[in-house]
Amino acid sequence: MTEAARPPIAPVCDVQPTRPVSVGDLVAAVEAMAARRLRFVTATCLDMGGRFDIYYHFADGVKLDNLLVTIPREAELPSITAVYLGAFLVENEMKELFGINVVDIAIDYKGRLFMTELDQPHPMAKVQSGATPAGQGE
Amino acid sequence: MAQRTVIPFGPQHPVLPEPIQLKLTLKDEIVEEALPHIGYVHRGVEKAAERMDYTQNVFLVERICGICSFIHALCYCQGLERLMGLEVPRRAAYLRVIWSELHRLQSHHLWLGLYADAFGFESLFMEFWRSREMLMDIFEKTAGSRVIISACCIGGVRRDISDQHLQETLETLKTLEAAFDKSSEVMLNDYTVKKRTVGKGVLQADKAIMLGAAGPVLRASGVEQDARQTGFAAYDELRVEPVVETAGDCYARAKVRIREVRQSLDLVRRAIAGLPDTDIAVRPKGRPNGRTISRVEQPRGELLYFLAANGSQKLERLRVRTPTFANVAPLVHMLPGSELADVPVIVLSIDPCISCTER
Amino acid sequence: MMLSSVIRNLFSKPATRPFAPAARTAPQGYRGAVEFEEEVCIYCGACATRCPANAICVDRVAKSLEFDPFKCVQCGACAEACKKGCVQLQIDYQHPVAVRHTVAFHGPPKPTVAP
Image 1: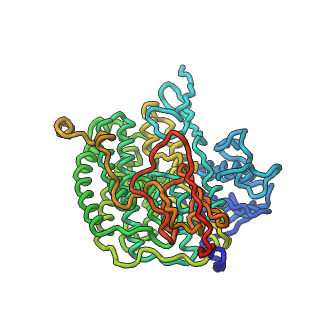
Image 2: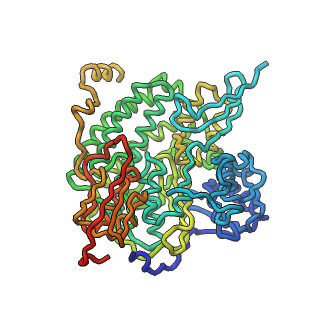
Image 3: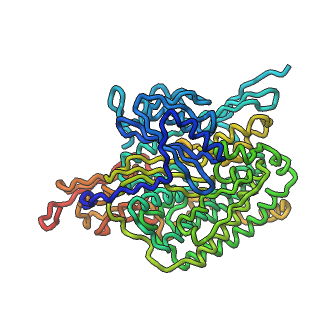
């Protein structure tokens, strides 16, 4: 199709403002957000192959404020539920769908939020441990 | 000595149309702890979105939620338009507002009906749903389908609304408003209804922010936040003042929605009056590349899409954060201390959409 | 309010209508069942590429088209993509049937048609 012939356009990155923080400083940075009375919106996890990019979105009035944590695969990610309890669903989701090792979640479903023991673990992860993912969709 | 009992509330419960299970720990009749369990309708939409073409995804994201299908598509298209540098024609932006607000009207009518049903007021439920049919007919006429209206596309809207249909819509809204005046009067002033809702499931403003509540739940607690203030689509011209109540109980949440219905009626009328005469869509050029966040206001609250694209036919990541996903934590906070008989009303008061939550 | 609503509902006609004898026709522009016009089709595959439900399969070499109406979600993307006006959405909805089937057709290989 002609679609395939289209040249890719220049990348736009307007996830602004985004402040990168290290894993060790994450909880402290989130506490600073809580001290400013920002509302926790959600977290977004991107599987970049060898690493995970995790954005934490906070609402400052109508504007958004974001934190970006980059962790290698297999690394531990501290939970922020001690500060923002509302993050428990999204952290469980990251743990279950991407296989990120999130530790100390306040309400931990232990990988059984959406899935059962019969499902292929971590369907959203780009690198599958073990067998190739079973045919989905279609 | 009071004994503790654990009651599994849902996923099949007469009053709850949503597949969520709450494990309620009760001391006598008082809820001490509530633990939500979801996972009955997880469909893997985010994964499917990575496997499909980005143009096909418009139809996929609409199916996340039937009640606010148009707004899902709008949020997705808006994000892609930002990545592709498209400027939507003004008429399309106004038409998007019209359909969005009609969807909000429709969703709030649905909710008000279900809410009335939750405390056993069947005839009020019927009244609201009778009115809702008028809105569904408008969708059928203007967009070609009652629920999944598929009117949004990347770069604009797929079809125009003719002047005749706009006039008919205004006529219908007049009838709708007259019916709504009567039914909302009961919802706000009836002695029995107030007895069931005032002071139930209170959420303070401070807690609402810390637990990340969204939409009417947040605004009923006195926090003035509405994603429409960001001025997406044509909301930059049609200014929206957030509807705020301060009590934070079930009654306040119903009141916020009732006032939002009036606000939506006003918005549709203003949008129709100021509808510019331009094209309705621009052709998308190139392929999306980069990362962006798109936020819109759904009837249930703020909807956030995170889009990551790498210049290919398929998106790298589509993250959907729906309002109910955010409102589960406030719900878990509201339930302890309430009576078992009030649990359905409190659960309904956040307007739960579990299909949205699980995607 | 209650009394007026009781009186109104007692003496008014039902809000619903009996389906089979008084079935309503959908308004103009309704997205109903998808129909193909075999004679017009050039087997370009535009509809199949756009279809979000993978309901259409087009073989451009063998000039054949297969459509599964039970996968179809009536979004109308195929009708928009078709340059020849071969795909059309009917006003009537997709009727239920007892046995699942697909719609398939193929054209005679015409030398004038570009693939």
